[in-house]
Image 1 (cartoon, rainbow, N blue to C red):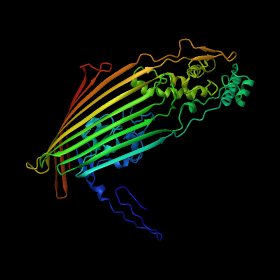
Image 2 (image 1 turned 135 degrees about the horizontal axis):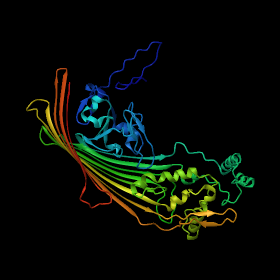
Image 3 (image 1 turned 120 degrees about the vertical axis):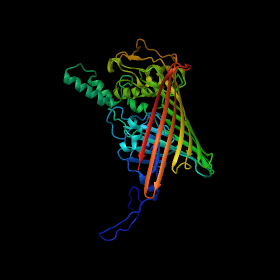
Image 4 (image 1 turned 90 degrees about the horizontal axis):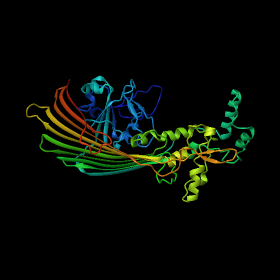
Length: 530
């Protein structure tokens, strides 16, 4: 089987030493329309560096964020995913490499500049075109200096109503789990280091023998792999989508409804404060795109999209006092502490967890909250206590995006002349809640086995919640004058584009304020292609 990009695959039988195979070009690839944001051209007419990815290719990757599905599909594109946290796993995309800290590319969705496209349901995307060189990004000026991603969503096609439903379920797991030293190995190496440097020994030979045999009192000689105790071996995600499309010669429509849920990697522990101890992400997507031919030369299109994103996380070990900060930065601290605490550092009694018995709950809040400052240092925390008593945070992000387009052909003036007006309105509102719990820590006296409460710490109910709310609106008006004409074997196209954009943001913590911050810009662009 022989294949090459832009050509039909061909299967041949090898006979002899010399092989001469001619591949036929794919007509579909030659005639494919490439969208560069403001205009479109046939692939055969494009000389600029533009790569295209179809929506069908995006659906082959079982990922929850579209940006991650581009890995390996575009030559020269660097896809860097720095976190796998549910709902915050957008990959950084670099078309020309990471030449600076802000070398991110411009994003255009259906002709309007947007901040991200990762949370668009992949079932809504028709194609993604990546503009790489100065020729393809010239119309965008300095904004396109790091390349441009042009995302086109699906349109309705003439024909009877077509209903499609898709559903997928995924099982996730870490590519590699850290290998943690046992209590005996860790204590032995600590003792060896102390003897080499002349420091007082933490553990006696009898202590090391107890760690090695594993028969000692679990309160004094624990052997706890905190990472394994807190983190699941695997977790789940699921995604469903329903689309309805079709239309007549004059009216075409496409609608999409999507749902996605991704669970986190922490185990679900029962907590007296009654909140989930594993992070999660849930998203609902909606899109409706309707195109109407008002006359033979006039077309009006409405493109409405919306999504609701719910991000949840235990607060864990975070210094942030706002919901968004706690959701995006709290859980790593729990993982970090779990990996740093030696297996002999703190005991963990599984028989006390996930109980409804008040007496057992009391034991859980005591014996599973030991920090052992005398052994592990004053900055130690108990990761299980952090997870089950630290509190939680969530954010709800509601996004509405709309584009209204009116196109008029002016062939009555001269063939190939047309004008188009496009108005886009986007509105985003984010709200969140953060509620911390009170954690009581205990120190252990290894001689008497007495537990002493750490000063200033105590197990209690939630403190006062913290709420945030912020908003963002943007209006975008574009006016196009286009001319495209073919003369025998020669093609000429010219574009004059004017764009006016107004952005406004309401201040956080002032959900009902009428005043905000506004930014406006006016851009005029022109291009001629022969």
